[in-house]
Image 1 (cartoon, rainbow, N blue to C red):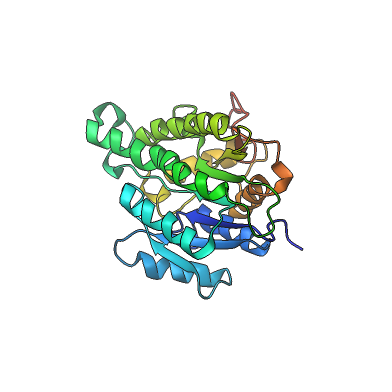
Image 2 (tube, rainbow, N blue to C red):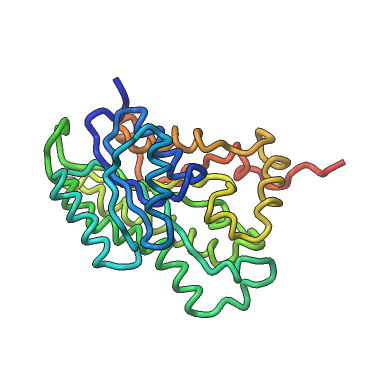
Length: 274
C-alpha cells in the first residue's frame, strides 16, 4: 500500500530524467499516485517527456501540450483533466524561466523590463494561474477521497532569499513564488476549500533549466563545501519530500518553504578554507 494510493494529480515541468519534476513524479508513481503530465509545445519536448515517463515505468502517460503563459492553454489542460478524471488531488508546479543572457554575474542591474516581468510571469504567476483552475476540481468528491480538498507544491531555490550572483532576476522571481505560496495557502486553506500550498527549496541541480544559470558548477561546488552535510541534496530526497507534502502525512502543513539542501540554508558564515 502506497502513501498516494487513490490520489490523482498533474505534474508540470518534466523536461527529462534530470528534472526535479521527474524525481517527484517517480516517487509519486511508486507510492501509487495516478499522474498526468504536460509538455511545452516546442521542439522535441513531447518525445522527451514521453521518454522520461517511460523511464519511471509509465508506458502510456496522460500527456497534454501546455504553454503555462497562456490562460487558454491552461484552460485546455485542466478542462481535459476534468473531462477524463473528474477530480484532482494534487498539482506539482516545477517550471521557471528567465533569459539566460541576464543570468550572469554583474548583469542584474542591466535587466530590462520585459526580462524582469517575463521571469515573474513564468516562474511565479503561473502558480497562481494553475491554482485558480485546480481549486474547483479539488472541491469535487470522488475516488477514495472522504472530503474535498487537495495539495499544491512548487519548486524554489535559496537565491530567492539571499543574493546568489548569477541567479539574478530568477532570484526575484523565486522570492515572488515563495510569497505567492503563502498568500495562496492562507486563502485556499479556508474551511470548505481545504487546499494546502507548500514550496520546496532545493539545492542547485544541473537540470535543463539550471544549465542556463551562470556559475552553476560553482554553486554546486560551494554547497558541497559549505552545507551542514558537506554534500548536495539528491533528486530522490526532493521527491521524497514532495510525497510527504502531497500525502495525508502533512495534513497540517501549509504555506511553508521546506529546504531540501543538505543544510546549506542554515549556515551563516561557512568555515574558512585551509
